[in-house]
Image (cartoon, rainbow, N blue to C red; front, side):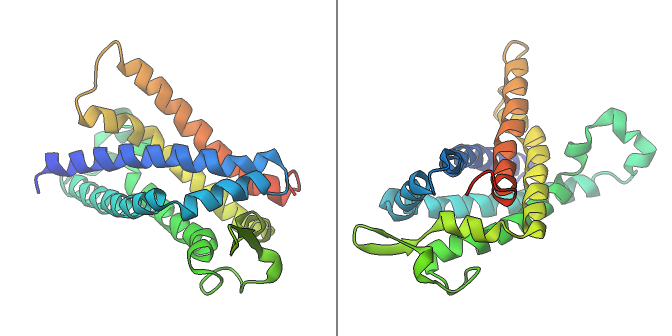
Length: 229
């Protein structure tokens, strides 16, 4: 596949993942209702039981996998294309720190994602087999006469550990830097680069890259320090 084709895949999957982050952040932020998880669990159950959402979930994993693979491929190609190291090329004036560190940031996000899936996705999809702990009666909710995992309580359990909270905060910090570069790049890939619109895209990108990761970071922190119970 050509370099342009790989960048197009990165752009398309990037748009898809940005859309996912908006939905995921919106659902998860419902813990801030602080109503014992009633609102959050209701929508978490909807996301986990709706057939359309489940099909889209498969597309998400495929898109995420493609995004990660293409990201590492492009990063590797860029490294090989630079026989002279950044130290000899005055990297600070030629590019931003986060654009030079996409490989590292992508690796940190991948590690964070694996931990996140282990903590929340596997218990909700497969019960307690691969989750943080075996299912107990208090970790279950009943919807439509079916017992499902209480993800709100799962969050309460997981985020009692300081080291887990730190990992999550570092993970979303990496996500913020990744988005800071990737948001605008996704638009540039498809030629959306105009003196009138580019500043707006940059502004929206910066806001998105700060607000969404900040909300994600506030969730474990708020639970750990007792703001949400």
